[in-house]
Length: 263
Image (cartoon, rainbow, N blue to C red; front, side, top):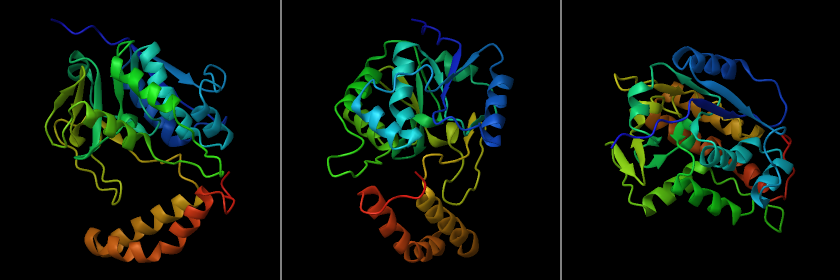
């Protein structure tokens, strides 16, 4: 039986009202180049209900825009269908063969599935409703004021494992979704920035990490510099020592003990 065609819409989220950065503009231009027949639709405060659940409302109040989009992307595809990309995803090869297979997700590593790399579905996909129900039972900020920055990668991977997904480097199908290994949608090593593009690579995730606060960015910068100077193995060990004060600071910020300067 032929798969129903995915609606020709590419969705992205941009909350907070800031201008789109240069990288986002470059990535959106690549969508237009490789998917010229697709409508590109931005979701923001003007067309998405920020009071749809406690998690979204609290994340928006904390100015953690990326966590708002964690819920929003599943709502959008469940209700509207189409393709979703984070704004730091660049298409480098046509997606036609991928889309012929129907709904898809991509792995960030062998052990994790990351919806921000690219995801697609027809409206009404059951497991996306399960993700919505999961978020609707959660709070972004607890009663003590601490925020929960567990990423969508963690939650999505957990739920897919419950449905039979196994950490592997092979293409798998789970609940009607074809899940592709990292070489398809995530050829960049997020720690070193090294690219490993193969004949199967369709997109590059550039790791803009828009959800990072000031302290997170400092940690990432130290880690990157250490790897560049000492190589991956030694660099990670050196970085682990140097970032300890920043990790403590971040923990205090997340628990509401220290006010974050990036909010």
